[in-house]
Image (cartoon, rainbow, N blue to C red; front, top):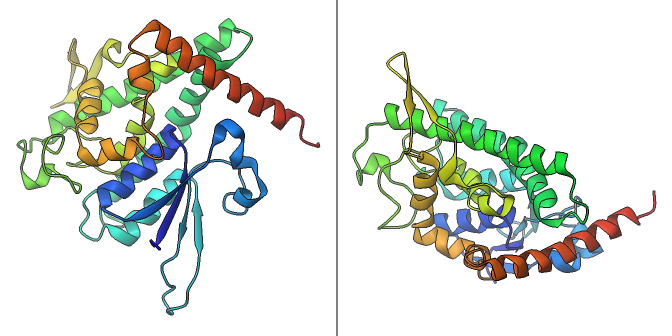
Length: 295
């Protein structure tokens, strides 16, 4: 029996945890929580995550006193921080506690958790799933998602100017992979790839599903040497997504608990419609069940 069990589904929130586990080289078992069947609302799972959402983990490592236990951890940011505290002593994808770069990572993870995650989630819903096409909502949430992507674009452009580390050097690499995707940044926090990148990437990698094209973001504002420089046609977010997708640990993590098919399906209009129809059906059924709960 492996020490960790991951309860997950193939969504941005689930993928960021499987990617983190793969980057750290932690062995784990997986339980597919089938959200298309509302498995996350079943009593057995609510004992693990009372919020009825994925992801969650069970940690079976003995307590500091040597006693057996099953420690639950739910909510993506909490799980990522927990895993790094336990398994990232060498700071492969994090920074030591209470350093300036540690708090940079915390800032950007919290920014994602309170910004991109909920806004893009609503963009997905109204752009893809809602049975009634409400123009205000369709404009509101993708527009806010694009604004947040612009913040990320500006951050990466700023980081590109600050971090001059050469590609492929020790200071610019991180994680358990050797090979493509491990070279120079820019990265979201500090001078290397961290859980801040993983957290933001997990949602940005689904951009097209929310109706956002990362190759068509507005200009990036790059503050360097006290001067505001405009960069056009050089989208840092797009290059950042491609760098992360090239990592072997990321490829493995994206296919947990099932193969990641969205991008392939989006290559044709027929595939896009099939994918949307399937997911719209169970999303709306789940909402109907929530509405029918006793008040």
